[in-house]
Length: 255
Image (cartoon, rainbow, N blue to C red; front, top):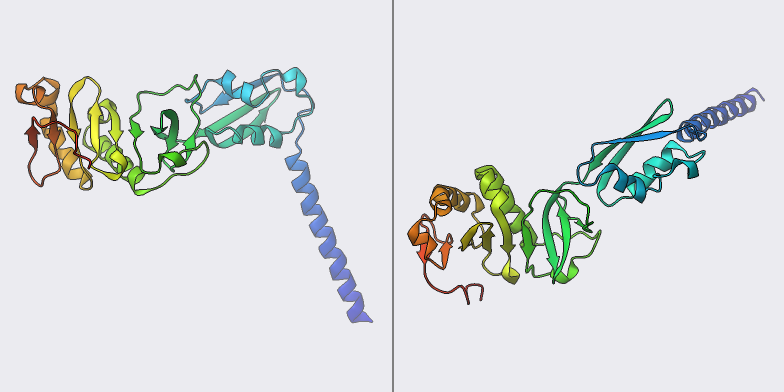
């Protein structure tokens, strides 16, 4: 009898403990503003302005958002394709939203339609009001038909393009900022185009760091319009320890 009594008491205590934990979790998650939030402040945003985010989350008019919970506000922001994480804090009648945005690496084309691609290889839609510096365009991936919003595309072509971007950033940020296009040629030799520079660069595949170092050594001459470079059809970085300046047409390079 004593054993049964102890088991029953233990079960009751366990149920009470679990109930308390669930209650506290529910109360903290349901922290209700009761319509007294008169202002929303957003920080951490750089891709879009505050009004764009508020419009997407339907929080641009607080008069229609009485009794909205902190969790609902958080969920709405984290549904935005550009947001990886949102922290919501209440400060009196103000809600503070701290955003962590996804890092955009480049623009990628599906045929002619442009999308963003993140460092995690996620494809994101492009909104007209997005605020970004110049980004390189990745075109002619072998699986370009798989480039769809919110999908992930990580194939050898895209990985090679990311390696070139990383190598350019490490070698010379001016080189990176001038990359206008990374043409993957459907698995063939990669060709780079640069803003303000007429001569394309045949980069090929692999050894990104070595090739970028050679390109940096020639960079000032390229910018200054070295006559041999200016009059050439392309520069070729595919050969070990040498850079070739050629006058041959580019057609057939990727065959």
